[in-house]
Length: 108
Image 1: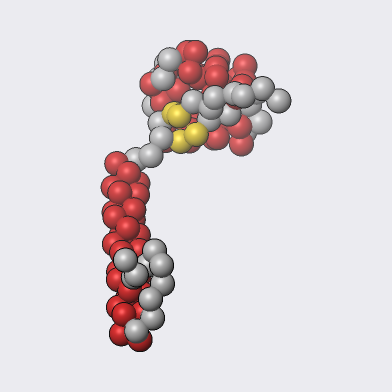
Image 2: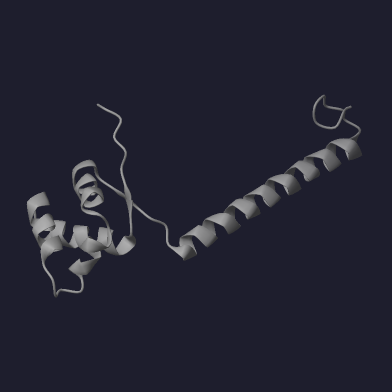
């Protein structure tokens, strides 16, 4: 299989596509809905370019992270970094207290 890039699309656009897919719409049906004016739910389909919409329908897509999700990921990464540092400090303290020297850990 060829290496295909899946576009990242806004959450509202992904929701609209999934709603139409749930109703049994084909790619053509989704594209036709994107051309209609008046239904506020499907206006999310025109929030991205036509080419991006086509690529999303054909290749699949990934949802863009919301601001809240991005902030959560940043905080989680910082927490895990801190957790790893604290764990390493605990190992070092334990080895030093017990008088055990391990090359690359607490032995110079």
